[in-house]
Image 1 (cartoon, rainbow over the protein chains, first blue to last red):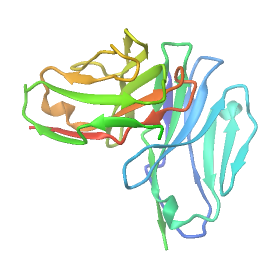
Image 2 (image 1 turned 30 degrees about the vertical axis):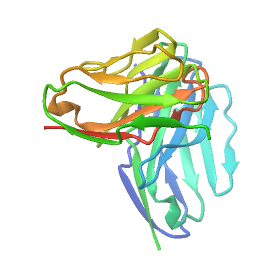
Image 3 (image 1 turned 90 degrees about the vertical axis):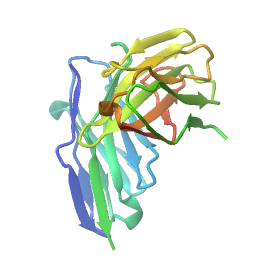
Length: 115
Length: 113
């Protein structure tokens, strides 16, 4: 069965610090997709990134970067120079559209950035 | 504006009283799904639909029903709500299936007493 583990329940940093949110996944399939979503205090879910299992290139988008490593089944998310507005719950998710559209979310990591 | 809407946003009800949470999307998406969010468990998929009249169970379907009579609408029905269904519910849609970004509704906070 597919599974996503976000071992860090809560992280607290001071503004301008770098922070990495860990995501480890389990799947027996060779084709799958990984996602990160952000849930700010207002409650909505915001898409951040999508990556398929054949694309191991790291991605950078402004202060955000993602490190996908199939060898360790990890898809970690780093925020550089964190800001108060980055405070949110972040979810990592794994999908298998070829296996009944199985969709698994991690439990989430609550990030608090203090001024 | 492209969006997924849910109603109601907040609902307090009593055990056994049937209720429906509506979900509508205006993006002509084929795929729609329902999730519940509980502390420490993340989001768990309840049901999903690949297109009109095509629905299937997710991870936690017990106690829920869905229907997809029109492409834009995907209501969630609780025939006999129980306190363990107290949760935050999200509807989502994507262009085709779970390989694509999902667009989420604003959430419905349900309390069953």
